Amino acid sequence: MRVMDERDVFDLLLVVGVSLAAYVHVYGLADPLATADEIAALLLALDVRVYLVLGSVTGVFFVAYLVVYLPQKDTNRSVRRS
Image (tube, rainbow, N blue to C red; front, side, top):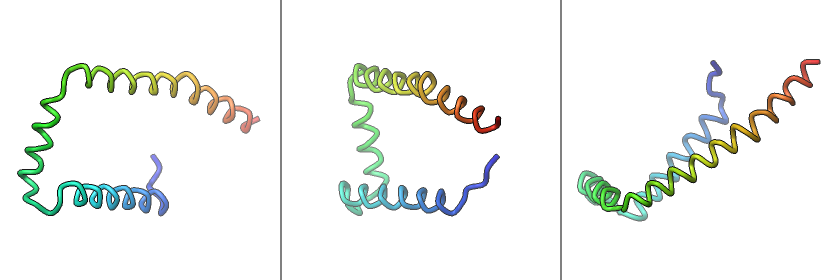
């Protein structure tokens, strides 16, 4: 298992910072519990078809990753070992 190097930590902190900035920009600094309730209500109000489409798109990308990227990465790794 690989320990996170400095670049990974920086990227993670950057994602957290951008997420917090986007949250504050959209919802402001209001009561976070009420905002969480609003988000939960919004997600529960979505139609089932939205979740089906999002799940299908995620599945397509995952299968493409398995079929295209991983075999290519494996062949590159086996060529370097020789």
